[in-house]
Each structure stands twice: as C-alpha cells, then as structure tokens.
Image (cartoon, rainbow, N blue to C red):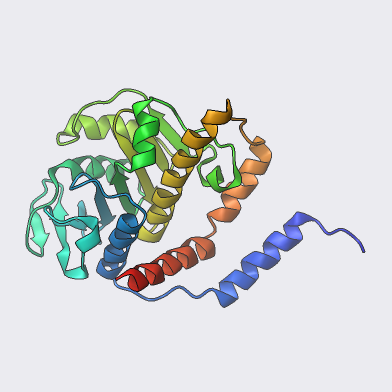
Amino acid sequence: MDLRAKAYFDERATREMREHLKPASRTLQETLAFACRILAMTGQEAGLAGQISARSTRKDAYWTLRFGLGFDEATPDDFIEVDRDLNTLSGNGMANPATRFHLWVYQARADVQSIIHTHSPWVSALVAARQPLVVAQMDMTPFHDDCAFLADWPGVPIADQEGVIISQALGEKRSILLAHHGQLTTGNCVEEATYLSVYLERAARMQVRAQTFGPLTPLSATLAQEAHDYLLKPSIVRSTFDYWCRQTKKAA
C-alpha cells in the first residue's frame, strides 16, 4: 500500500470536521456563562481574582462578569457591558477593577475577541518559580511559539500602566504566563480563549510534574508547529468547548 503525505490526511480531516462537527448555537452571554462554568469545573477559580471578557460590538466596550460573583455561579444574566472607563453600559453591577488591563489588550490586538485571566493552581506554581513554559509534549503544542512570558510582576493590574506592560509583553501571541501572578489567554472567540486557558493549566501541571524526573526536552519546532496548527483548528476548538459545556450540565 502506498504511503500518502500527511497533508492529504490533514486536508481530509479538516473537510470532514467542517461537515460533521456542528457547533452549538448560543448568545454571547450564554457562551460566556458556559466558559465560566468550564473554568470552575477545571479548577481555575481563585476567589474573585479571575476575569473573563468579550469584545462588544460597541466601540471601546466589552462584556464581563459583574464583580462579586465566582465563575461557578455565573449565568447569562450576570454579564455587563462596560466602556473604557469601566462605566456600566448594559446590565447591573460593576466590573472587576482588575479588568482594566483587558482594555489595553483589545486596543493593541484587533484580532482578539475574548480574554481570560486566572490564577489557576498549576500555572500559579510555575510562575511562582518564575519559569516560562517548555513545550515538551503534544498536548502542550497549542502554545508552541504562542505563549509569551512576563518575568517581572508589575503589581495588581487596576491601573493603566499594568495594561501597557502586559499587552506589550503579550505581543502577537495568544497566551502569556505572568511571573508571580497567573496566566492570560486570548482568542478570536470566547471558545478559543477558554480552550487555551484549560490547556495552559494542564500544560503547567505537566511541566511541574515532569520536572521531578529531570530537565524537559522541547519538541521539534517543525512538528510542534504542525501540532499547534492542527489542535487550534476552529472545529476542534469549538467541539471541545461544546463537550465541556455538556460536562458542566452533568455536574450541575
């Protein structure tokens, strides 16, 4: 039997996924609420420290979970629209003051439609040790050449300067590890930002555990890039998100 090039199988898989994997239809607020439940289900809540936002259709505005609620209790009605001064435009309540740095990321990156920031346990352990991510296993490849590292903590991000520093450190990448702080993931949709947040916490857990056996060996750059592009296909991202949504319903 003749061996066919991997590109053939990649193209076929992509075509068939577009045909057979149909994402669920939800409002933005429903998607945000499910994202919060997924973050809680995967152990990423840390009191009120975590944040989620999605760019609004209104200029210089975004939707976010009203301050005072945890990820695990979010409902679609709990999201508010705020302007660049964090004034509430739609809904009731106030934004988490620390979401101010989201404004700077949105301003710098027209491609970013959603941002998630958490102090998840394994990421927190990794950044407490001031370590960047080492992509050494296939499930870590969504972060190959796509996860920045901010080595110095600028303080609680409730002012503008922290937003400038974090957005500049993120650059054109989707994710960033913030030393002595936590993680931030972005996406072209809420589903992608959530997918990356869950997998970044898993990657950090893997790195912390694997280091007990010795130094990690990074994957081949060529193969890691190939896996990065495959695992970030929209069909895979959205279908994984839908699966996690079903999981949260079972757990309720």
